[in-house]
Length: 253
Image (cartoon, rainbow, N blue to C red; front, side, top):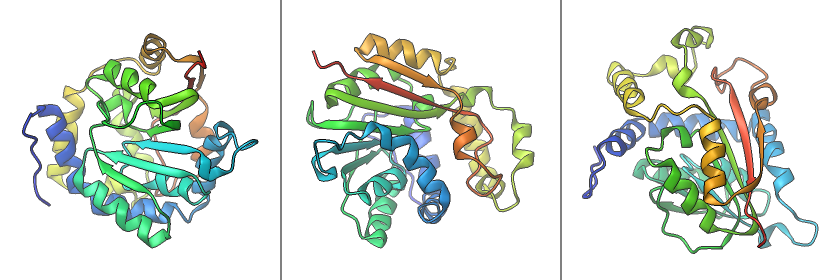
């Protein structure tokens, strides 16, 4: 896989992109299978309450999947009839997203784009979704401020994340042999550890709530029980780090 370096280089982002560039194909295969596993509906159950379809048909509602990876949430919601855009900074992830959407026969707009500084029309989305992204962002305050602008009034941000900085490496010992973490190369493990060391060490989700409020979000709900609902089995999809669900609203006025 080619190494990617940006003209206006951010060394940490370069490292993150190149790490995921190297994992894009295996990551894509895993999430393609997940779309046809019961875990897909468990994830959709976490999203569905925020999609108000009482007065609108799904096709009237616009979703932005931020840091879409290989398109799992983008494709999952597009299958339900919503208009979806997915953005990711890693070129290979966008390539895999497009392939996966074609396999699933859904229309999604996938764009290579920096999640912290998306160049999209302000006030154009009903729902923003992001998973396992905000803990990696070096400019999280900017990200929340920019995401706030993208939402329509009364729009919703859903952030699924975990406190990965508190990760105890011994938790990986419980993972099945087939789990992706057991098949990383030495170079990938070293790259991952290097990224961990250089990421902001903010305490989550408390930093998120503070920055959401500063950006203008209101009606913020913090749910620390997400993992118990999603990861019902220790299988190939299992995440040993407890995840939380953050829901925040953009006020009407």
